[in-house]
Image (cartoon, rainbow, N blue to C red; front, side):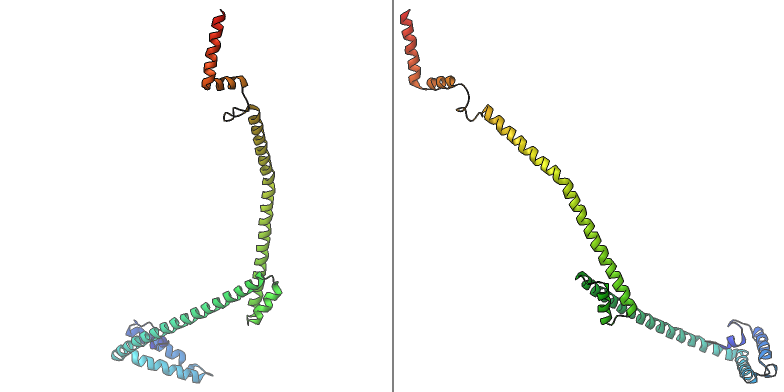
Length: 234
């Protein structure tokens, strides 16, 4: 926004003498007689310079102009700030809408890719949804590459798990065999030695008979009678 000060080429805080010198210099530059071939432009500019100097050279008029100009500048700045804010809000809303559209297109492409469709199908689907050709190609390429990478990662993981299971299988079999062998050896030792809870299968039969005779009252009396008869012989 050009001002009277700009017309004369001086700052707003210029003194009266500085304004006068600037006016003389500008008037000489734009005088019609010194601009042959461009008299119309020079005449209009020269008149504007004269009007600017007429106001700024008068202290009262200059004060009024400064006050009005300041108010105009404030209004202009406020208007420009509102315009910039409205423009920023429009740009933000447009960017959000564009991002939402892009996310929707990516989601659509991912869905078709998960169903096993290739890159060309993804591209065609996006074009059918009125997606820009360049963006559709970029999305189709990116989603297709992502799906290939995911499949390769899954195959690598499955191969690693299979290798791990194969490496662990011999150890598991050896452990099971060792456990079974130990159990068999333990059972065999039990059969040979017997168990404390089954004295009928092993041990000395005479001792069992003597124990049984000692435990029965008739056996005790028979023993005493046998001792008595031996005493009579002697």
